[in-house]
Image 1 (cartoon, rainbow, N blue to C red):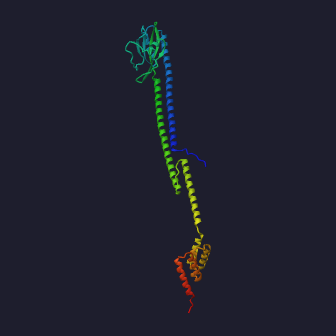
Image 2: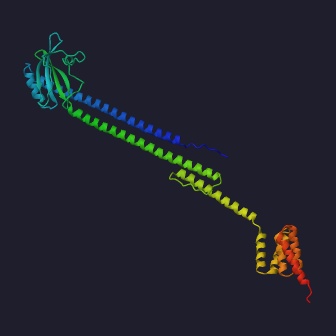
Image 3: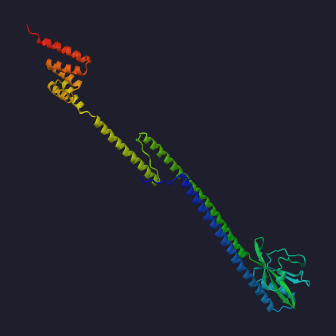
Length: 375
């Protein structure tokens, strides 16, 4: 007989649920990291393009100033205001000149290019730049952009440094340029990304809860079904087969319940067959035959009764009732000799039967009365 291990169990189902939950969590984490990576990549690309744009517009302003061939520093602020005011991205400008010992930078002029933009600028005319930055020193030789992004009151900006020569002296112009449009777009994308992450987290939690609820319901039904099946099988093994296991919605369990019910039906059919066979085995056709003889005797159909009981005495020679009823039948027919013979045979089979003895006495008395001559 082929034996197969049943691999389905509550632990197995719970394990599958945990595995699915882990897969969902891992997928959500991967999606989270993908969104984060995309945001960082987008920031990097946007910042790089924005830096190119800032350097480009600063060079354009620088080239225009060079075309004007400015000879005095006092004209430079006017020209900067004129050219930069056409572009709203320019917010502020400061003109620096390096000291002779090259340790300090002197503020020559502060120029507000956008009236709505307010910024705190150094109050001292002579400032010393931090060594880690050195943007002013680098800006003496070429255009350089400060990678840091500053913000105030919802406005974002970056600082760009560019050299400009007038009369043999090199000045450094610090441009404060708006990056609000770019970074407001990035912030919008960031907010959308955060909302997406939030929705993913909510969906993740709901999905895991649903998985465990379904797992609980399945394991509960599974355990309940197996308990009922075990209980019914114990009852059936003890002989109680008048049972019926209700199928449940699950197709496999329903099939198992129907198979169990089919087995019980077959057991009931087998039990009915055994009962019929037993009844047939215990059935005595002579008893029906005997009943007919008794009925004939009651109906005073004496000859038929005698014929029945005579046949029964042949088929069953040790039958006390057959001889007893033959004795009664012959007595009713006033055949006292045969009646006494039958009663005596009955008494031989059942010697202590008092009624038979009484009948013998009565028949002997009737026989004597019948033999007495009439005077």
